Length: 109
Length: 114
Image 1 (cartoon, rainbow over the protein chains, first blue to last red):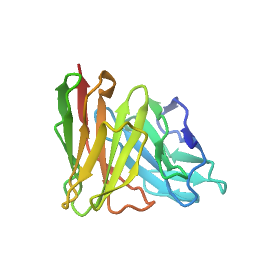
Image 2: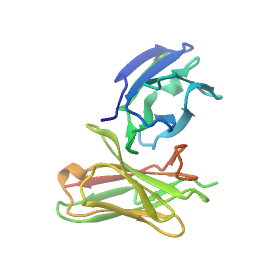
Image 3: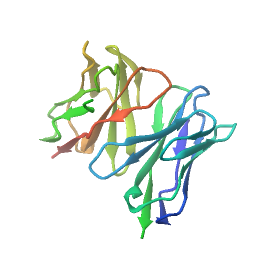
Image 4: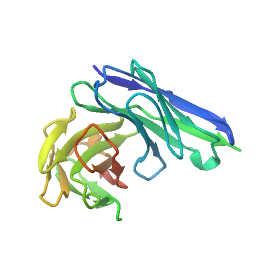
């Protein structure tokens, strides 16, 4: 049974780089891994998506090893406004979409 | 471009009743997915519709159903409501039903069952 696992919470300070890892076994071989950010009282917001190796956009980087059993979201130089819950999303090999339980990131001044 | 809209934003129902939630996707988006979010279970996938057809379904009982119209708008229905159905119901749209799940979420409908 496919499952995604993330740390429940993380603390960081402004200006630091934050890496959040999601473990996902039995995911579909041809589907993307996606990360979302969610603030209170809002729906999740797309951050980044990748299939393998490394993807970078203006807000984050995503590292996915060749075996695709995990992925790491990297947020460079976080600010207080990055305090939110971060979710990874993968598709199981039976086609079901599975969110991780979310990582609450607290950025301190 | 307008985002995903969901109506109503808040809803209070009693056990045994049924409820219908509505989602209007971003213009041009043909895929609509529904999720349930609770503090205990997190985000759970309900189902996905593409071009009026249910493409994928999560592990929810048959009391949860949905449909999609020709204009891509979608509705979700929950019959015989239970207390445990209290949750935030999120709708997300994407351009197409591919493995590229760049979904855009609406603000959600907060359902409270008493």
